[in-house]
Image 1 (cartoon, helix red, strand yellow):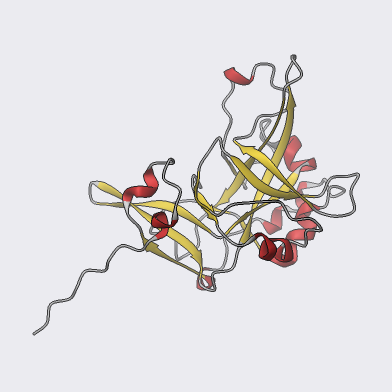
Image 2 (cartoon, one colour; image 1 turned 90 degrees about the vertical axis):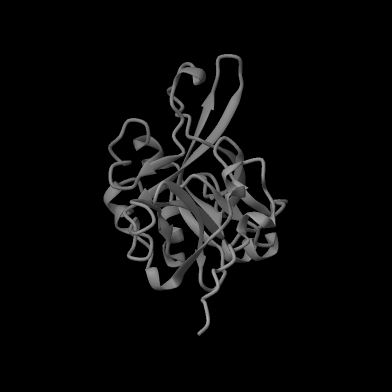
Length: 230
């Protein structure tokens, strides 16, 4: 599961990291939530360069008749997405990168769930593997949307949750985005747990539980309990 994440890296750094010829104006986000517009990077068949776009988080497939009567999943299992009717066409033809620099998960501690903020030790942004769709209603309304792929957790995150987002190795970005690569076997090996030694996390306060809270306080570490002396 990946239901909240951050993207606060300056746009110039994102443009460099993801090899974007143009910069999309973005403000720092500390609590990105489902149904909101999120930044993605994609390579369309007619293009030679990657382009950024803002898509709604929650996948709405093109074949859906009534958008109000279908579930719009924010996550898809990497192990089965290529075969599931909801995701298989997007998996074949419409893959994207979802830039992030951290994400939240909720760790069960006794009778409560403690939010933790997970990020790279070096603080660098990364790409979550995503799928996107373009839906057009009978009234001409167009909705472009996306979902994030998840996989089994690595050793660091296994005690926190039983799933984690698929974080792609930068060397695999080109292969994942390639619109001409439509065989699932050509990209499935890229969808694996990220090396745990590159990641870390710390507990944060319950502020992140409310998606209306979107500020730096969401990623403020909880004070560590003092150890008694003597």
